[in-house]
Length: 493
Image (cartoon, rainbow, N blue to C red; front, side):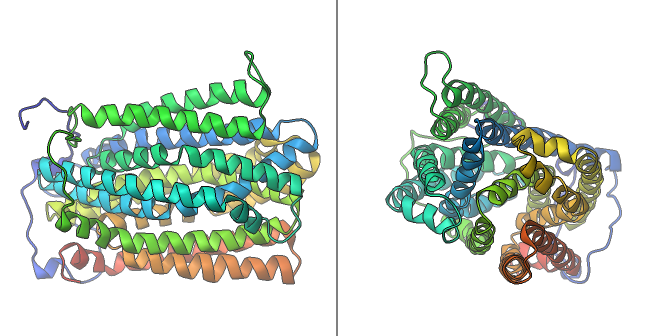
């Protein structure tokens, strides 16, 4: 088995000796250590880019497909397009709420796979994948059933108390139910992607997710508008197209890990037993991340319900701007994935100096690219909003909000990357606390104040969101600079 030819993403770490858990290295604020002998800054930046760029391209293409879903349903004629945009928005947060535990456990899987990759232990890295897949298969099937049983209540709850029309609610339930039919393959595919990212392999997920996105777009065209003999299904067609694409990604991802060409693989021949030690490690990292996700989803649900109270048109406009923001997330998330992987591998080799150097380089690159993105948002704000819906009311309300979104870009990128590095070190409890403070205590409460009390409408919603981003950036930066993550990674905190 170990002689099987396999693809390994090599980094500067592979040429360095193992470090030591010297107590002096585990305390004090994080500075900028010197480059180890034989490692150039250019090689370190190359390591970051090699992991980040395929991840960035994959995430951007995936988000572009999601945006295409909204653009294509938003282009339905007249009022139907506005209702369709609002309906898709109503289904978004309940779907991610059901995925909370899966996302959290995948954080644990990525961190552990990266740690075992740093220790050159292929068998244990692959066992993390197997344990995670079985656990997430059970959980995703259970959550799918829960979602189908409660879909009508969830969508009505998201409507914010009566401002959304009954027709829009019915479309939201239809869209959400169809999404749940593809919930299990979606979650399993996410787990495989998380394990591959732990070994630094971001090109393979790029390939299978790109194929899935092309399939999604093709079926969008066929099923939304009724082409090639298919009836025009509108919002339901967009949902079915997404599910078909997710199933394609699942099949290819399974083929990848069954092939054993890569550092992590799935062994179906050996007898399966839950490994208490590995599961405990996954859960120890994942549970704080789950709490973080629960706080995040609770805050976003409160926030989204408050915006939904503004009515169909403004809620549809909000969904357009949120889709644009989700695209800007992809930049920070790609570099965050690189930070998680390189931090985990560095700490697996006890190279605290390389962990800090990789973090510094990743943050610098992330912030630089975010400034370019901010400039595009400022220059093309009206054109970007008009892509989704040509209604003048939507464009007039949404385009100015992109100025706020542009101003938040450097802070947004920095907090994504810093939190990604902290997760790679296993410091997930603090990120959960920071999310609770900012999303629940800042975005939700400030949003209620600005929209319901001060009457600032959609501007109030986005002022609250930007305040959340700024405060979270500060909290993450202070935590990282404090250096406690080093002791956590060594099991001393």
